[in-house]
Amino acid sequence: MAAVDERAFDQLLLTLLVLGAVLLLMVWGRAAFVTWRQRFTEKARVSLADMFVFIDPAALFKLNLAAFVALPLLTWVVTQSGFMAVLAALAGAVMPRVTWAVLRRRRMDRLILQLPDGLTMMSGAMRAGAGLQAALELVVKESPAPLSQEFSVLLREQRLGLPLEESLRGLSERLNMEDINLFVSALTIAKEVGGNLSEILERLASTLRAKAVMEGKIKALTSQGKLQGIVVGLLPIFLAGVLYAMDPVAMTPMFTTYYGWGTMAVIGVLLMLGGVFIRKIVSIDV
Image (cartoon, rainbow, N blue to C red):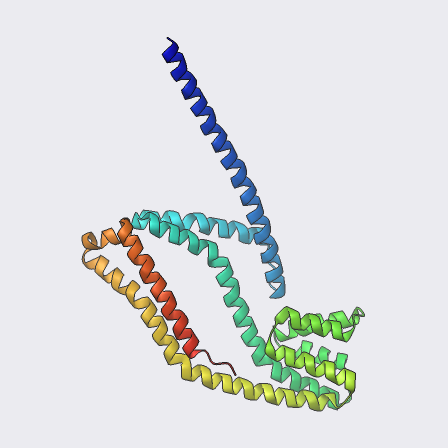
């Protein structure tokens, strides 16, 4: 009888410990979820505001959460591989960051192409007798986004009474681009030491156009190397898919065993190293 009571007590104690661990895990998971949601929405709000994209960050968080949950489940149903499901979960987690980086890069490329025309427009307006604010207003009205958006912020800060140096410093810190830094330096120096600002802007526009032409030539000459890097990186994945379609039984251990996962991890590391080396070779700063 005493042995039965002792066994029942041990089972009760074990049950209480398991329940306590589950409760602690739930509390920790809820706190981690709340922290993740706050960080995601705050960063999304700032990032979208920088790109003048006005979308509810809470809706984006729900979409990201759905992708984070749905991708691993779908991958598990298709491949029956826990390793591939974990990779899909990681892909769903980093997808917003990659998407934002791509969208920001495209926006910055459009801004670089539009900046020389905007500076030429400002130079022409100032030669005609307009002031700096009137020239900025002309660029805002006549230029497409994103140049008109960024200059509209600069113009709005000027109307609110913010000093020109602080507005330009904010523009430079917000965009963090070499071409914009040259524009900010030109306006700051012209304001401090004087000079013909319209001529300075015209020369800067010519310099930026020549720089853009040179970068375009370099991009065209290095495009073959970049394409080769993409082909080399995707070739193992393509071959693995072809081999799986030809002989699923022989390829299944690659996705369901520890040594198969280790092999794929080594292949992934080597592919990333090759991509880094190719990127270093074909990346040329002007």
